[in-house]
Image (cartoon, rainbow over all chains, first blue to last red; front, side):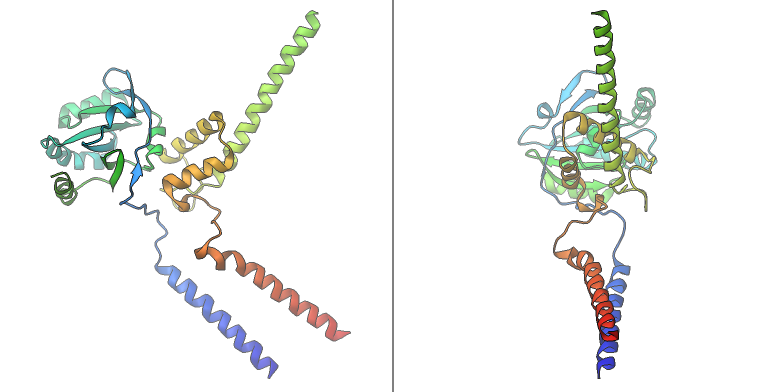
Length: 172
Length: 120
């Protein structure tokens, strides 16, 4: 009777563990951040890309405008891919594009913009990548849609045509 | 007088060194407890990815700003979620994770004690 009880418990424990691990197999172990967060825009102080003057975040983000904050670098190949969509987005005057030049050399970055066009209204240089961390970013390219000082949507990786349409739909 | 001055200067320099060493120690400790989000199976401390390099710099700056270890963890948790911490926080999802080893330990102890008394 007693040994039966113990073996029953053992089988039960085994089954429970099996189910847990089996379920765990399907969980993604890659970092997948929430893309629909209503987070405040972090405050930062960065050098402007063109003339090295210091820019504060409070001066950029005004209340009733949409802003598209895009982290890019000339060394990042997916950034070239999304560039045409940024140029497309630039045509819309309801949204202002802000570029975060991430860990880049000035000459390379300005050549990049010369070759492909400059979609940004303001470019800031994030030389050591610390300001991007404040945004919760972890790679390039990454973009944030900002409205009323809140991040309303986040785009990880290069934006595509669908993302572009979605943004245009939101800001309309 | 001169001797005292020299002594004081040396003492101050040595003190600064201690401070710095402490900072680097906590810096490394924090970096070791953080998961590098873009590289699998590595801590921020071990990684040389752009993300990890920047994150280490952020940790360093935060320590210099006077934030405590817990405050830095909280800051990063706010930015990246709980996944960045290697130490899972005790909550509804992790009860089992935290309590299972204790339960097994207690059960094992109970078995040993039972055997011991039975022999007697």
